[in-house]
Length: 467
Image (cartoon, rainbow, N blue to C red):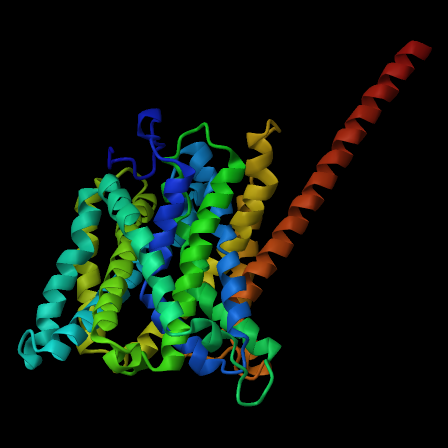
């Protein structure tokens, strides 16, 4: 693959992938141990939630990634380049910059989690001196995180394909062994489930799941063969994300309930006692590391695309992946050795990520449904009102922030809901409704103008005949 296509369209010779292979990419990418933290947060913060419904709904909303991947398939350009068609280049550079920073954040988070897991194994079996185990883990994590993305797209696809099926089978095996069905459907101490807490758990799952991937959606669909139907381009990625996201969230909540994972200010700890056997413990640690690396391959690969949009030209992706690796490692070192609490840092990161991602996702979904798909089916393309779109996005960002609750601030909307954060659902719903109403009004106005022009021509023609 030519890795210089940062913002320009892929060539026909590069379109060698298929929709099922994209599904495997998303299957592996969503089965990441960062969801262990999300699952633990859900179980801690929303003990009255219906865990099973939260998992199903949040996983099903991965359909947003499938929908937003359509422009990449049709136009051959990455997600942030597609975003410029909606918001205009100047504002889209700011959106792309925020996305690049979020990708750096995810790379750092993943790096830290790999370090914690490797350290847990080293300390459990005395493989290295305890005082230095974190440093050995750090060196291995950095090498594992960034070698494959530097190689390029083919290496990522190969690594994802090999890992995806193993990850899914292993997750199912652990769920069966730990009786995950009972853990996910158990009745809370109070004896009833709370609807608002279930919405809060769905929102939290979206922060660490589907809505953290929407800004990457077109980066991989643009390599798919043009003979693929649009329905397959939506359904296959949705299926991959639904299966992967659902399995890892179910596993995370089950492990937390069974005592297999513990979380706190110092980060994530996986306990062999909670997993039952040493073999299962080591297998799970391998599973967690592979899932994290699979996730980070996409973060590292896509990061240069966002930066290319900010700069305004194609970049050598390999060189900028090395730059990302350096910056993400520095941020990871801060989280490991300087930040007062990795736990708080992770929550803050999720909230800051979703404030832009959720409303942006809503607008891009409407753009694809109202403009891209009709154009692909033969309708005349409509020019975008970038100025109006920017104002709708700004309103969506403001509403999302108001309903946010995190260690930095608690919005007024969250206070009304007694601290429950449903900001992703509010943000995406707000921009979807306003954007769709705006497009319907614009269509009616255009139809009236066209009708008025036709009526004028008809009246003119009738006048000439009467003369």
